Length: 251
Image 1 (cartoon, rainbow, N blue to C red):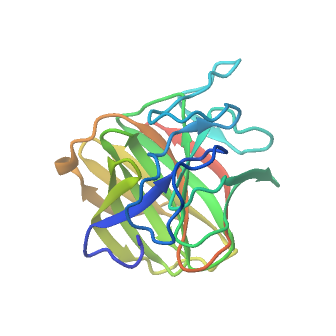
Image 2: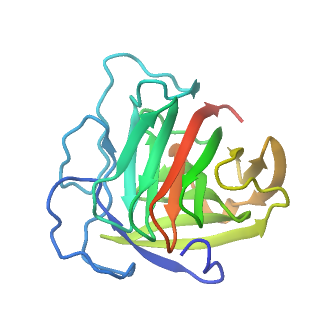
């Protein structure tokens, strides 16, 4: 569990964001089962039982760098879920992207599908709208084969940086890189901004537009990948994270 077990490797179950019937009975445990590797699926595509990501092209060109406020569309965004095989609840409401998690110990990702980035700066303004403890975060250099980096901030002010990598079908390993606590965490329901700059071998973490720390990630040797946002539940549910905007730009 990302928040609680940062001193060791963490193996979790990952499940498809699909309406297809699972190939095996879901386990109550988060540990290794025979459920298939998550597949990135667009918000309009028909789910397919394939272990590789598929992205539906948009009828209009989508930008590489942008600020998106989620007023009426999530074109280009794709969904990945880990820890549960239910259909993810992803909606737009009041100008926000809502990631709703209705089960404990579940992780939900929204990744920008059209582009891969080596160096990127991603920022978001979000609110925790229901459920605590919970976390929201940012992802960069997501590759289904090589792994990804993510920055998570929980409702109690604890944060962590993780390297995630799929080990086999349905089995992911999270390697803790660093963790800590911020001094001025906003309470649940308050708006808060976080940022993640992936540049060369360094991650720069920002909270409320202030640099929190810089972290060397050279040992993971990640090249390019998707950028996006994430939310997670722990022992309680439901959890709802509302992302008011996402900005993707050059570092």
